[in-house]
Length: 254
Image (cartoon, rainbow, N blue to C red):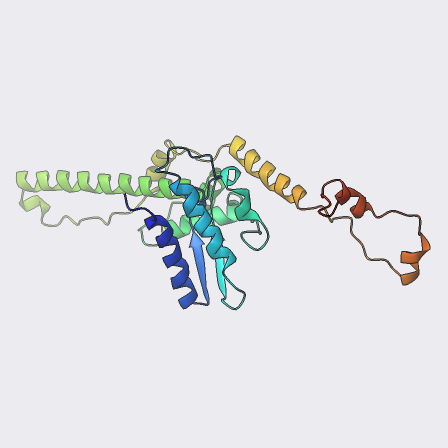
C-alpha cells in the first residue's frame, strides 16, 4: 500500500486544472470519493477521509483568478459529506429529472444515428411509450434491437449459404438484402425493457432537493426598508433575524 498516493492524485488533478484554466473539472460518481467522513470504517486506515480532506483543501485554494469550474455528478446525494456542499465549494444543487417525451425522442435519434433503421419504425411511438425511462434504459433498448437485427441477418446468411451449396445455379440471381433494424426488433426488445429508476427513487431525490432548499432559505423573508424613516420609526420593534440567531450563537466574550 502506497500511503498518500490517492491524495497526491487529487493534488495532481487540481494542478493540471490550474495550468489548463479556463477549464471545467468534472467529477462523475462523486459519492465514491466524497462520502461522509467517519462512515467508512476499515478503509485502509481512513484513506477515504484523507482523500476528501485533500479535495476540500484544493477546492478552498482555488482562487477566483483561476477560472476553473468544478462540477460533480451523483445519484446518491444523501451520503455526500455536508462540508462539500457549503458555500464556496459545491454550493449549487442542480436536480436533473428523467427525460421528457421530446428528450427521449432525441435520445432515440442519437442512439440510432449510425444504425440502418427501417422506415416503418416510428420514433415518436417509442418515445411516448418509454415514459419514466432514463437515457441508459433507452440505450439498452436500441442496443438490444440492434442485436436482434444482426442475429436475424446472420441467420439469413447461413440459410442463403446452405441453399447455395444445394443449388449453386439457382442462387446466381439472388441479391443479399441490407440489414436494418425493423419494428419487429424493437417490439422484441421492448419485452425486456425495464426502468432503472423507480418512482420511490424519484420521490427520494425530490425530497432531498426540497429539504436542501428549505435549509438554505433562512433569509427568504428579508426585505430592505422602503424609506429611511421606517427603520427608526419602530424603536421598540425587534429584529426577527437577530432574535432567531441569538439562540443559535454563543457569545465568545461572556
